[in-house]
Image 1 (spheres, rainbow, N blue to C red):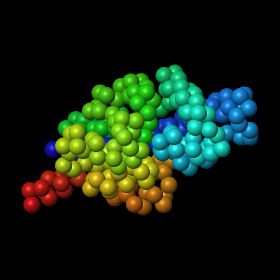
Image 2: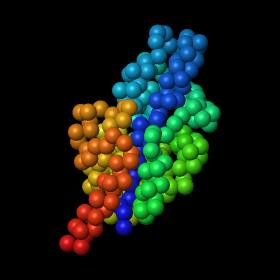
Image 3: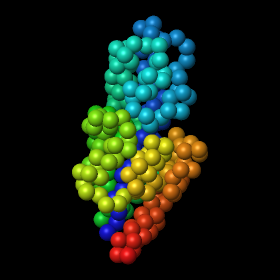
Image 4: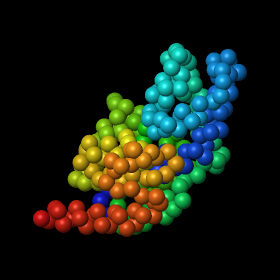
Length: 227
């Protein structure tokens, strides 16, 4: 039996940068129109923290703004992201669907664990019909924690997973695997950072590499179980 796989989505399955720049620019242009922001849109700064929950994003990008202003900005940004997804302006990573199809055909249970909000994730899953392969999508919004490790633990507990692999591009994904005794597969994609990837058990450059990696991991787990 193939071990379950828990995927991150932003920067792992979904090329967030395809919708990010326009949505962030629209958001900060809106703030400028309200005289709530001066200067350039902090796109580079956002890329550095990509993957953290949105409340932490606005705390970092808008440290001098009130909680009410951050909440308003959060809602506006989310609306712009979802509009871009529904208009087809986003994209999955190359070979994402082929990798998911292969894993599903191998009997693999597939989950998504993301710091994204439910509405945002639903838009991606619906537009690309990911629920054809994905058993369930989990959002950080659904648990009483901002920790990706806790989110992965919720999946483990709900589905009684004895072993699994976590596939993601950032340290939070790698730590979520390590903290739960799972295999950490790092993706050397757009937002990945080398000083974070060194902590992964395996690093890939293309999702198709999972076609070779997952069967080998499954065999290893099976042998250890029998032993």
